[in-house]
Image (spheres, rainbow, N blue to C red):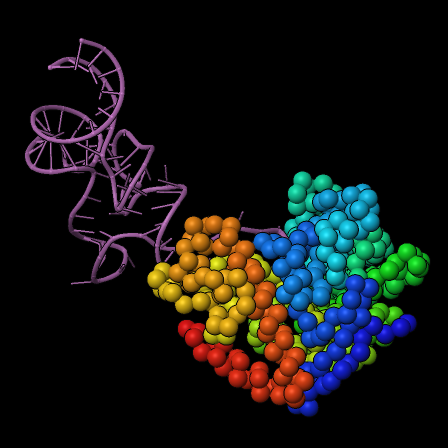
Length: 376
RNA sequence: GGAGAGGUUCCCGAGCGGUCAAAGGGGGCAGACUGUAAAUCUGUUGGCUUAGCCUUCGAAGGUCCGAAUCCUUCUCUCUCCA
């Protein structure tokens, strides 16, 4: 298999590295943050704006698109790119996370997962093969295998069983991809599981690394565990993943978590946090997250983040933003979304620059000191 | 001038003799949000020396063991008729 990843430079102080992931819709410079557009749209912002910021890849979701608009529509439009008019890369999550988060509505067996639609309660079955097929129709540049994500606190036996199924599913996913041959144009990534058990994580990381996947994701983290546990397991798991392939931690996106991942040689991550928080009035700044709803901003004339190039920071005050969010005005959520995505894009630029200059750890320390300074 | 309806905690609004410091909204305050069932959710919202006590349901009196709830007077608002 031809490698899609090229490492460009490594920081001398840690495992942080610069790289390029080459995909059907263009190159992605890493480390990279990927905004989440579950339904084929990143909530509250135009594709053009995301494009112009510089994002080279966004997410969409197999589970959601399969339920709505459905495969017939996507087939008619030749895939999601043609349907939603995003001309860069799309990574689709497999539905593995929905299997986890919709836990009340599903049943996992080795053959596949049966679940009820959160929309109308209708019953559906996802098998690893079917999920590869669906993502092939979606036209994903990166497709994810179906996996079994588990919460912290479960026993070793249960975690082992989830990993056993995940491994089986990974094998079946590869077979299905190979069976599709030329029809499958994306890149199928494997997912490491193993819950919070070192032996399982190690085995999972090694096994998934060695399989015929062009990229490896770390799943099953950021599922409700303590931050220290997250940090431990990112570091531990990354240790056993090949350096030849892009490494992707699924589901993280606050600045502090991003730093942890990058430090451990992670190349990609995605998260709803930036966009969801934005809609709820949470704004990223160098001084931590601002809850713009708070009364203290009522008369504040200053911009959210000095130097930020987003519309909000260029044109409006904290007081105006405070007002918009309080009134539940759509523009509030939109401006906040743009801001948070711009902020993260810029943060990743700064991170890449610091690696380029061989001072990632120094940058991390300095950044986080200020980020945490205003926390109560 | 006549007839009727009504004044409830920041606002709207339920309650119509004890289980009422008083449902439910809204607003306010605080918190959460990390492979999106989220423009969402949670807590809190009279005071105090807080397992209790005090003040509160337009005002003042009264009935009752006990009243936001019943009676009397006053006052204010709204609707209809002249």
